[in-house]
Amino acid sequence: MNGVQVVAGSNPVIPTTFNFYVTVKKKVFLTNDDGVYAVGLSALEYALNRDRFSVFTVAPLYEKSGASHSITLEKPLRVKKLSESKYAVDGTPVDSVFVGINELVPERPAIAFSGINKGANIGNDLAYSGTVAAAIEAFNNGITSVAVSLFISDYFNFDDVCFEKCAELFVSKILPEIENKTEELYAKPFLFNVNIPQSALEKDSVLIKWTFPGKRNYGGEVIKRVDPRGKEYFWIGGDQYSFADIPGSDCNAVLEGAVSISPLKLSYFDEERTNFYSNK
Image 1 (cartoon, rainbow, N blue to C red):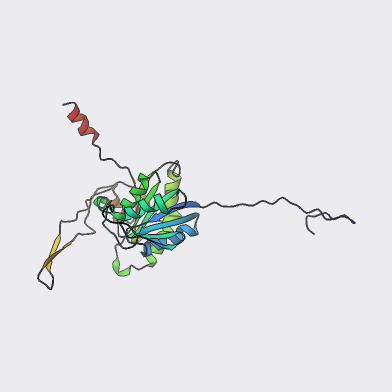
Image 2 (image 1 turned 90 degrees about the vertical axis):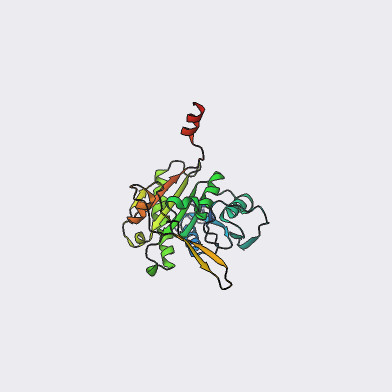
């Protein structure tokens, strides 16, 4: 009997002290705007759960891209339970966060993620993006939040595996970069917008840049067509690759093949103009 002294005619002395090392996983709230069945959401959910996080997911039942910060007030919201830790809300991304954090989640999360979005959210996109709005809503609830998007530059070679690689890159390289450079990340709320270029998924060494929102030139394109009944209808167009060349911006970073991390803050207040008018 190794480690136990046995004396003739006596009972062996059995050690009673055991050392247990239990890793407590951080609680994560996960959402998106592409819908609860989106591949990007599932890929990030899997990568986070496999690492050091325990994920609770609440996302829109259907795709709600471009929903911005809209919230549903004119009708009731239905919630569909998919598992003990995954729910779908038949509303907007902000609806999902509002209901999820205030009603569904069993305990307050340490951090929230929104994504992975199919397509970049850079420059002016922040004003329209449901992905970013969902992160903002969680941030407004006092939770550090990160919006995560994949900039797709080559649709011909794009498939669902790209989301898996993107999720792995985010969890293994990008999130640690944020954690290492942000004091009190889990103690007080911060807001980040992350964009990962498709080209970075195949690189052994990934360049990460801290950026600010740039400017996308949508071009103002509106496509007018006529349906089979003679009624006009319209598509709002836009060029994914037309950006203002602003060094240090998120747009420039992803075009250069670098991961972009933009710290964000929310304020509708123009202090300079307020002081100007007050003193005039």
